Length: 188
Image 1 (tube, rainbow, N blue to C red):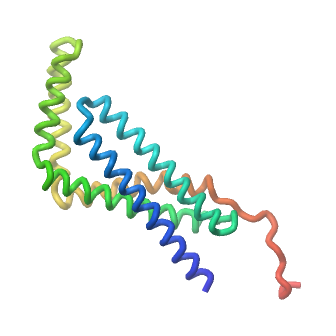
Image 2 (image 1 turned 45 degrees about the vertical axis):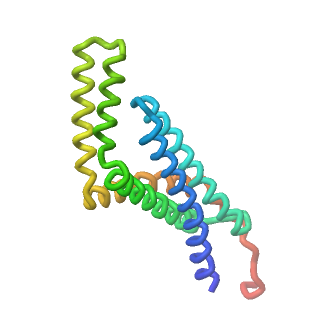
Image 3 (image 1 turned 180 degrees about the vertical axis):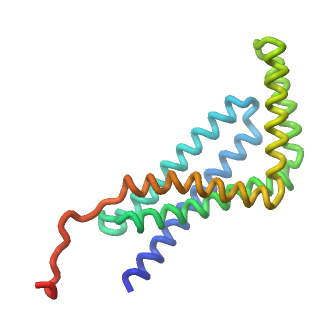
């Protein structure tokens, strides 16, 4: 009975944090797609928000440990965190798909135009500007390969794996076992 209760609480805690993480991802993507105007700002936004998400994974596990009386094993910590990862990455993928396919299907064209302006206004030599623009065009073409349902599914699985590794590390760090287990009357 207690194992079933633990699993449902792991699921509930993971779902709650998964939704919060998913909404955080949506805010990050919205800022990158609509406000950021150069690759440096886009990169900074991405890094800051991903660090925030990793912090939320830690908080998810710590909250679960607190709910369990201050002690948690690796299995329960990781189950809770991994549910949050699965839900958060699913929301991220669905938001990306809807935004890039329905809301702003010309995003990459506008992004490339903005990058061309940014590169042209930079102080780098002309030969370097051409090389940079060619690299950006190549990267955008690769990104557009992901705009299929299969591409989004592949991206989802990749990000679940990557974020899952960070979640496992978080679970390893926050786990806390009792040093001495109390004896029950039956074992005496």
